Length: 460
Image 1 (tube, one colour):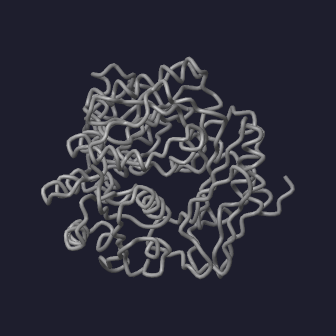
Image 2 (cartoon, rainbow, N blue to C red):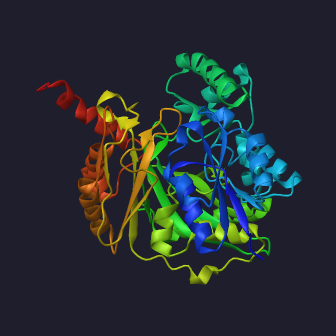
């Protein structure tokens, strides 16, 4: 059985990606849009379009009732949430099921378990995955301070309901702990409606890697290798690649096996990503979270494995077994992804929305661009500033990075007031630490610091 019609409950480049996968499967699509996205490419790609509300996300893309109503009115059988918005909302997944709609993602109880950092940590520790020393559960201020003092600094305070790099603060000294605890708690209440926080040891000069998995309802589960996501700014990823340049084949297999063990322990279904931190000497790894959705960086895995992850999501949700066995997963070469955001790196990455007078994506062999942009599109201030993702493949890392630099040099994005991260990304991938593959999660801060004298005109 395959779905006849799927509602795409998202916007931007991921909505375009989902619509294309549906078309290749012969599935009719219903695209929803807010008033701010009325003229988006996504709407022209969908077979039907439904306006679901005004620009603010809470009244459109986060409006579960409007999305469910649109799906039922247009005869959709399933809802694909993409990433962000309602993609990891267990209540939305449950409401879909209650209305006879298939949610393209894991079961609601699995989403809920991984959405709670304390519950996820406990479940993965019970499954034998290594976790960072810490409280392992929500704690009040006095216990949190005692735990931090016992662990030694730095520590990281995390919102239990947090995700996507939000709701976290690093504390480097005891005297700063109480204020940081209260800020994190207040931020968690504002962002997630849940002020519970936990405390863990913070790894300095860490490496961030993640494992892409696929699981079906027939007992099959595979991993598709590792992605390295160490290039981050404020825990938001900027550059991703597969495989990781710092992880040995033996360690990669151990990390991937741990991810599959964790997935099987909770009855995972669909596509997902298990994320881990490696310490500075790259010997020990620790589970940090799992993302119950397609990732922004999924194209790098597709480029090295040849597996269409969105297609697999749709088929799994429709009840099909996986189309690939573990022994058939044979990654080839290296793929790198750079996120082109409408942000100004010279002004502390301030968002810079506006109309695009020019948009010319790069081309050439083994270059992929995932985007919803075109000349005349207005980059709205209401949502994530992602304009496009440039993904390049090469038989080895040097070729892939040289191809990426060439592709970024070709990219043209211009418009009144619009600035992008393109040139900054070229600086990042040219940095000696990145080129040698020995960079850590502190690379972006280092590059920002190195740029300051140039921006201020200082000669010191």
